[in-house]
Image (cartoon, rainbow, N blue to C red; front, side):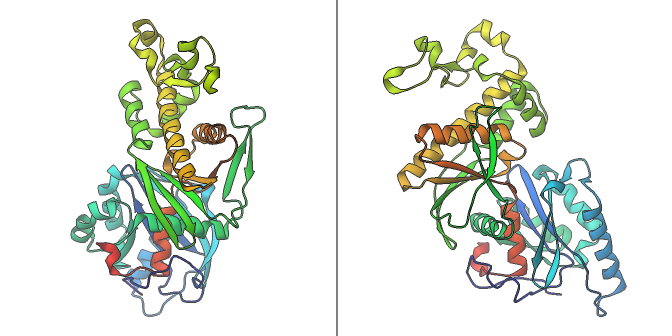
Length: 389
């Protein structure tokens, strides 16, 4: 049983099936974000029975497998996204990838769960990415006697994206007629020759990467206005308690009740510069009017929050893509989890403001790519120890 990982620097996984380095009874990767922790767990179809293992270790393996793959909810807030489960081959083993998430605020409960399931018996090192891999490193070492092998989050993200694209032909998609409900279609996108592309990672905040090849990318920008901005504002303005509740409210609201539109200023379109009357001129611009502020519902407020965050990210993405001369823009991250409304708004904004020259592309596994990259690092190490600093 290999208990630590290190290796050379290479983002490709061409030899993933040739050099398995550990036995797959505890194969998982962590991505500990500012708001949400993502865990990707590989369950082999047949767990090898190692005669050298103690009965205590074999029992712990069975308990962990049964608990993780036999449930869809964990504690008060852990969820397994069963619709994302996918069969694949890692090393010499065929099995299923499971995708689990829980609020990062619940990390102490996760650590207690790991102790109760005797996970420290099975490994001394976990591959993890995200800021929380640094923040919670001491807790893992002192409470679980386990080391977090810290993997650069953007390297993990890109590695995870490219791996999932290589095994799932239905991973990427785009929308046609995104603002017309009756005509809107979700269509598969051919990601075979994607380079260069812009990757917009929408988590608590946003990072924007220019990806020019399988191994090459550069972070070219970002913004603090991201998923946590949307949820934080919704919690403050509407009293909602979860991302799911905020999205449900937004789906029922009308942001025009809160936002000042071009038509509110010009009485119609601003034709000289091609600005349609329905365009948002000022987010929450109506809220300075006592009567309109009083008339706005919780749903309207949530919809305005969603529109403000989504349109700002879209605008920044378009400007960066234009500057880099890139046409394809891939949007990922947990802000898009079950958030078709934002995807359609992004698709419309990218197409409209680029005059049809740019395409917004989305991926089925949304915010799990960093955790996937960590899992791949556990199985096929590609980073030396300097990646932990």
